[in-house]
Length: 192
Length: 89
Image 1 (cartoon, rainbow over the protein chains, first blue to last red):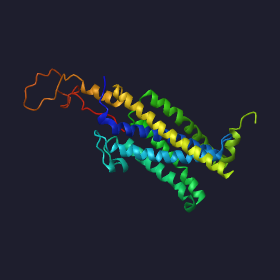
Image 2 (image 1 turned 30 degrees about the vertical axis):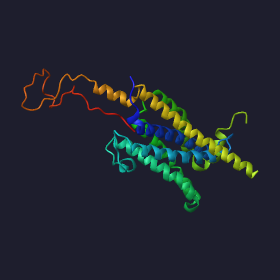
Image 3 (image 1 turned 60 degrees about the vertical axis):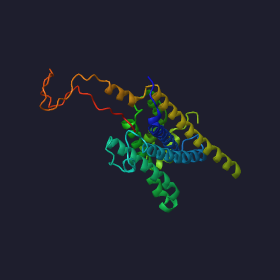
Image 4 (image 1 turned 45 degrees about the vertical axis):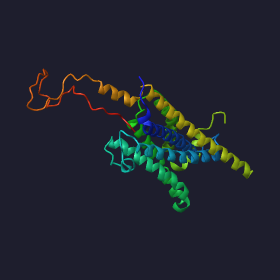
């Protein structure tokens, strides 16, 4: 049975952008945590450049995810529905999680460019909440995502999100000061 | 040395952007493909709810009912067709 895709093109675009936003955000969070934990064998310069690039790509993908929904012929959401928490009547809690996650990733990510004004130590603390925003995005996609029940989506999310979850648990488990040097020791190969 | 660093930076940025665009195109193609082939998770659900047999329909007040189902369900028929909905995000 074939379905005419024409009325669903905005919806397809929004779904694809959401999937990319979550995947890229997961990889970016992993890279950020890897930098924070100073894992051996990874060049800090490479991690930093990729982390920044992917973070900016995530913001573009989130913007496309929300903007494409505005053209969807089924939901007909308003700009407020897709940008202000608790306004949309469609799966309000899950939608709100996605909106808060989007704003969180955007503001916390872009705060990098104001880190001198904010102060390095304060910015570092602030930036660590990005992981929380990412977790909200993960919950939003699993709770509301159309493709959340499909095998390919779950496999893809497993591949990109599980390493981030593992690194996050490792980072949370280590006190702030130990995280810098301690993780390096903890993850040092036996032969080293 | 600095030039090599800049070159590497450019390469990594290109890698990140290209990878993201490739991932978007792949995701778009997968979602498009499953929709066109009739395997879309949301539209599949919609089709199912629309094709439910209309065994009983809600009767308006004052009309004679031939319905054999018990009428103590608070006025809503449990088997009345659900509105066509799709799960979207």
